[in-house]
Amino acid sequence: MTGTRMYVCICNALNDRKVAIALNSGAETVSDVFRHHGCSPRCGSCVEHMRDKVSVASQSQAEATPALELAIAAD
Ligand code: FES
Image (tube, rainbow, N blue to C red; front, top):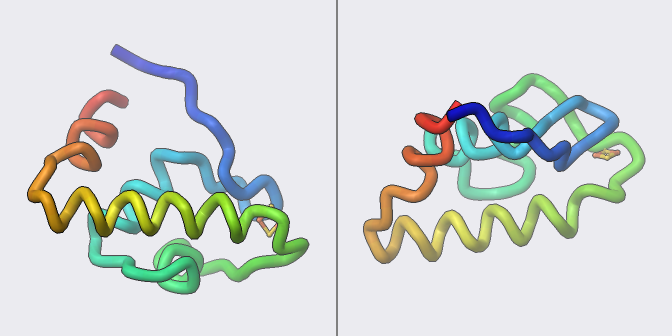
């Protein structure tokens, strides 16, 4: 099933899938997510939302939930 991808960072065209890939590859901070994709914040309006995604991902990993893998596989 192909779902609609929501942009998390418009300036860098990072959608939720790209963020999930970075997090699944070991990104632990917002900076890590940008670095994974070879970009950096521009306007900064996405940072709060991205921080929430990083926080949720770290909680999920702590609970050993494969949610990120499912999100990536759903593409
Ligand atoms: S929306 Fe991410 S830096 Fe502007």
